[in-house]
Amino acid sequence: MAARARSEERRAEILRAAFEVIAERGYRGASLGAVAERVGLTQQGLLHYFPTKEALLVAVLEARDQWDAVPRGEWRLDLLGSLVEYNAMRPGIVQTFSALLGESVTDGHPARAFFTKRYAAVRENFAAVLRAEYGDRLPGGLTPEAAAPLMVAVMDGLQYQWLLAPDAVDMPGAFRDFLRLLGTGSPGDGSPGNGEGGDDLDLDQRPRRDEP
Image (cartoon, rainbow, N blue to C red):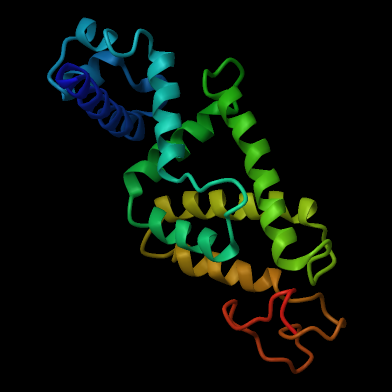
């Protein structure tokens, strides 16, 4: 048991080092030797825990998603806002994720399949969140399925802007503004916050579908 615990601890150290190296150099610029050096191992010693660079990459991505994990069906809009605030407190992890995401669009990248599968699941989860909040149509008329990719784009796009100019971009505040936009209708529909004299409602104050 003690040996297993030491092995898991060492794996965690390697993953943290890999996050740092990938954030600094990108996946293609990162090397197993550089990761091994940061944890006081030889490259051969690192291969005992992760036999290939691709295996290490997959472990890095899976670990990142586990830190954000919420049981299926338990996501809510307020939890998404909290996740953005949480990400703003861990720039290194966000930087690593963003670097890998940007590289993964190239042909043959080992993370491409991971991100393709991940985004399909994220869009599905976000559509479920929006349907639970608004029903089959958002106030602006979009279906949850149509709005879900927009929410994903806002979350990840804000991360890139924030990483480039953290003093200029308030990532949590901008995402809260986006959530307010989701809760307002298009001009002329009479919904609050659409310029027809209604006051913008805080998300916590807006009645839910099951409230009178």
